Image 1 (cartoon, rainbow, N blue to C red):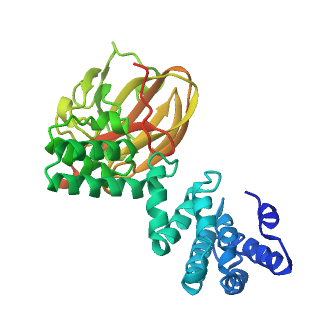
Image 2: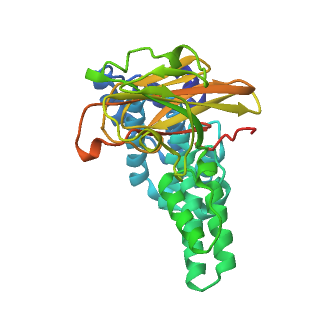
Length: 364
């Protein structure tokens, strides 16, 4: 949103015009101290706004950079604390429901409602179970986890199962998904985590190519030039040829150690084909503690030349565009020379989803 777009939203009179100007000053703050002094002065004026102007302050969060969002979030908290008895709850509920606003602004509005009008928040929460904001989904999912646990305590397993299944359908955050999966498995219900997350499980893998002195990261080995799954190439100490590999890990880990042994100073490649039902924007999300590169349809999306700094789900999010039909993915995964026990992992996990973390499943 351009800064000038804020003014029509908040200019209903002289005071509101001043508020619009102050909000624009907050939105203009940038890195390395840019606009910081002016923002401090503007913030002192914004926090004096009446509670009725909270939707205007929240609207200013749309498209705001992280520094500006911090200023605005602090201003919202200050106005809320001062005007707790005069909060425009219906307007805040309306703001939360309006998906044209940014997820961070809508989440901030919901938090104000939750802290000050719990009944209204409880009415609103069920409608957020499939919200485009993962942060807002957390609230109804948390309620369903609590509801399911309470039903389980009463030995109502059927109702508990329905609550957990509904929660699982809406859950996008790993901690809640783990909790729900554990509960459902305890009730002998099937849980397909790879499908829920959208992990790619079936790959062609080839190794080992050399990574002595970590030079393999930038070395262009044959799989980067052409994917020929029938080919065999000279590798590090042995020939390298393609093998089929299907992950058995619930979190989709593609572990090169399994087919190739615990090698060091090596490079491996994994390739797969993803058939998209339509042309669409997507995200490729990868977790890897080794050096890695990812190509989609021959185009390098991203590379990370770093080793053993830890790995986690959705560690890196790579915006991409899928074409309708077959899309080729190639991952390069490098292992370095370190010998400590915590450096033996030579693996990655990769999933395809939309911006909310909802899995995009292949046509095949």
